[in-house]
Length: 260
Image 1: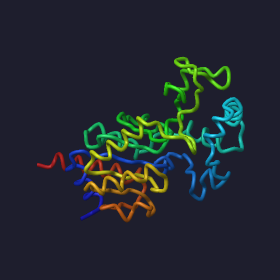
Image 2 (image 1 turned 180 degrees about the vertical axis):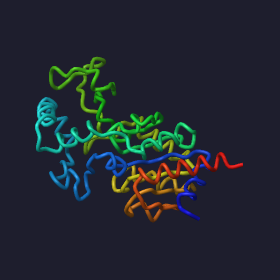
Image 3 (image 1 turned 135 degrees about the vertical axis):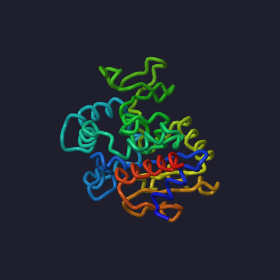
């Protein structure tokens, strides 16, 4: 059977299908990856695994450097901010939002922090690595859009508890917020089909989720231009760009629903 048709049949027949997405999906919107040949870390070097410790030790210094780097060309913070600010959801994001709105996908777990799923119309999103457009208090977990908070002093301080505020994105060495992580594992335990899109399967704990789903009997569908660490565990593998493949899957599902 054609893999796209097979993927459509699996998703259409599932009682509870979810998706896991990674950087490969956003690359198609012009956002650079981190580890690829043209990735930010390839160009500038990978950040320290102690990034969160550095922030915690001196939040004022971290914020001063961050605000400087956001407006100064020639560093990874600036490059990523420029790329994301100018990016738009691609057909892959749109197709996933349509599948969610049609009730095919019950939830989308994303490793991406660029908010493109939300801008495409997705609503039941679990952003396991946070969202670059939000701020979060490390004390009480207060979370608000950055655009609604004027940073006049650094480090910014929480209006609720007086704790230090950081970007919502999860740093190296920082625990993923417990509520988000628990929700991701709960969705994984519940699903009987998981659609993998643009994730390399190289970053835990997200990389564990497809393996846990498969152990419970879920059907795994992978969409990626290149083989990944998760490819051997997928029941259906579609080699191709998400922006081309996902609209075809969505169309095939719609045909299944409309066929007499």
